[in-house]
Amino acid sequence: MMESEDFEKLIVECEKILRVNPVSLKANDFMGYALFETGNPEVKWRKYQNRYRAIRRVIATSGDGRSCETALKVIYVSDEYNMLHTYFDIEKIHSQRLIGLCDRFEVEPTQYLQSKEIYFDISVSLLRTQELMDNKGNIK
Image 1: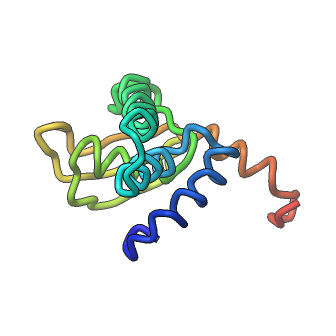
Image 2: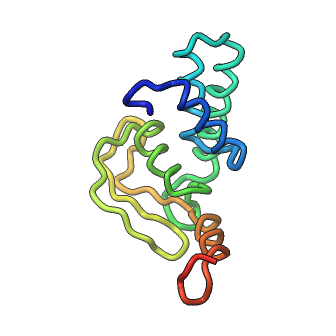
């Protein structure tokens, strides 16, 4: 929808996502952009833009990302990639590996992330996945 610039449809889909997950980085970002592109008043699209930025700030300050113990906290795996690409301006990810309850990324350092590795705590996401699965790995 974003690529085809179908912003009206994108707004409808973002509304659906945000009803279930009001802290979705991607949905808040896309909603703000779609509302802007469709000529909505600034007060309307800025609400989503501000929420998107605030959520990213919360994630960025939830830890230092240097170890699993001090990992950045995220709810969804997609938030890791959003943070890597849009917050830390990471262009190259060398590897990603699950270590316990954390995702460890080896990355090319940038001016916004001087380290070659960063950890994200995905324990909430893993617990949610476990809640949705039965003991045979099938969705309940």
